[in-house]
Image 1 (spheres, one colour):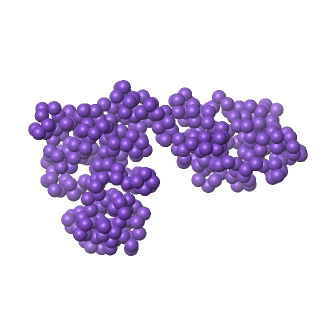
Image 2: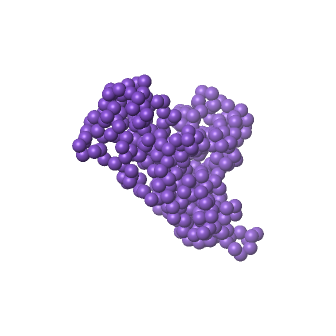
Length: 394
């Protein structure tokens, strides 16, 4: 969808050295590509050349296979969504008028513009009835940023350019808006070029990340590839010494969950529970209810003090549970906060999916185990009790 070929930009006021130096890159349809790098490396100039806010010195820019140099410049800009850090809402226009500006220029009728505006405001979690008649001065910074994103999407452009669009927002609202935009982008399949100076934002948002250095692309790869295999000392230094921890942001609890069948229930034979605890990766067993949801855990001490079968009085409360969609850096934080070596993972309906352990997460961070690879601690049930880990556990 976006194809840059040998793109170069020199500014006479800055001498002979190019600000962007013969770069080539391709962003496929539906991808979000983050341009990342230190100040003055050429990433914003590259972005502005795509919609010709800055004219290239040489090279070619193709969008959907068409050379942008052949487009009418006003028509080109109307076909590309553009969102910037300063938002740039017109203060004398209402929110509805700001969002509907480009569709109006394209000749849309009023009912269609209104319907599109309502849809977009709902999409960015702003109530249309409340915010359509409001003016930018009536909005918080985070709300203005959401309106800016909605305006960039107004004419349903296939390509969006975003220049540090969330940089001026406080961390709590920034996380929320990032999540909302990524969901929107994935559902609408927009192709996005996104400038950022924040490595964590780049790793979270990007399908691809291009790291710039002195006007050139030092490395372009997926976030996981960049963190696992930086191509140079500059890239390794830029992404940070904690890149193993950053990789955990890209992995989910579902990828780390192990031994989902090694569980107990109230009424379960105590002898079978003790057998399941032998060679177990955790020090206790998760106890499930009839809907396969964790209700607690039980260990050797509780089993020894009880009778022939497990009863509710023996079950201890779990310190926490982790959701399948939680990133592993958050899960590691939960483990440390609770002083635990493992926590139970659950799916979207709260059903148990397996044990998420400190050791497994550390192994995945090191890259020693691929996602879904069997853990060296995953021990099958004893041959003389094949039902312990499956049927009997249920």
